[in-house]
Length: 127
Image (spheres, rainbow, N blue to C red):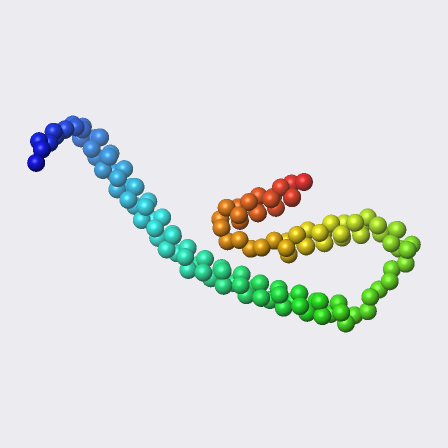
């Protein structure tokens, strides 16, 4: 073996004790984080199952609403009422546009896309 050059560093007693405390504290924090992560996984699975159930229920409700729209008669609104409630109709159209945008968006499970989606919603609320 090649000759190794050993380097010795002298620490004061207080420095050595403080370093040991810092290392032990760091290890304790890492173990706490690991426990939190282990508790997170089952909760995440439960959340995804719940979301899946909600999604299927929403699909059923949408299907039932579409069937109801087909069976109920269409209402003809007189021109006078249309002009009178034009503002509320425009607001309704804006809401319908937002709903159609949400329907057309595909679900992407990456964290970045979810973050961008949330930030977009926050921007919309700020407007």
